Image (cartoon, rainbow, N blue to C red; front, side, top):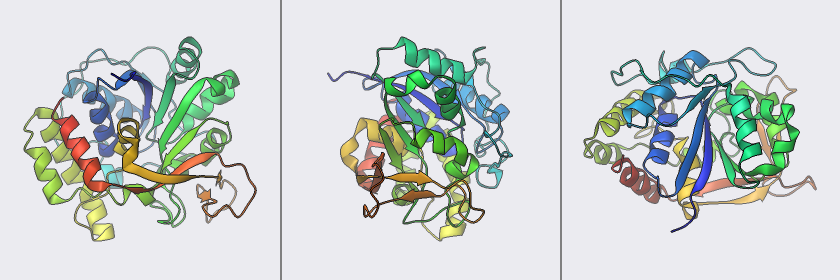
Length: 314
């Protein structure tokens, strides 16, 4: 058996964040989830933290620790996405208020402490939202950067453009200053941009397979997706909406599903038009350091097979 991957999930749940967390819960042989840290993004922090607790309860994972983090970006007012995710972030199913409680420790302190205490090069950061918590931790404790095994993130877009502005993807746009710090920290990084996630549509046949699992988490997920996808179906005219965040966990479980290349990626923070843009040097036209493995293609059927198989294990 391969060694379990120690991970921290930094997240702003969101229905697609829920799918990523469920995928981790369904993969206990491969993944050792050290904790979930929450950040303001899709919805404000009070909701993202509540949602993380709800997801742990729904999947009967009361031992998973949830830490609340940054409630606003480093330098900008918070932009949220209730128009996509609904008021709570998990609109769709009827969900009970959580009985589980947040940890008293702040998410940033948990991230710093964990990276200092675990052996260097063993902890992977999985980021599904704005990068505020990670940037704050790196700024406060620069010694942790070389201790990170890898940072696998959902964020950015290049060939597909943006989804919150013509140039920017939501997670990066919410806190571009934080993204700039993280992308410049010298950590091995893998980026799952919209170029990949827009290939992963929650088509009716795929959702039907999920519904057939019949478990409470699977049914809740289907109801979340049916709510969540309506926005993208309207926007892109597609059969189902793209499923963004589970790509991060799927990459850890089965990297062969994805292909891309090592590129220089810089974050635009100055321009009004392109704030939050991930400027990907795909063709290596500059001599800037290649700092991110940028994914471009995914085996969509293989991805959904993995997702559905793991959801059935929860």
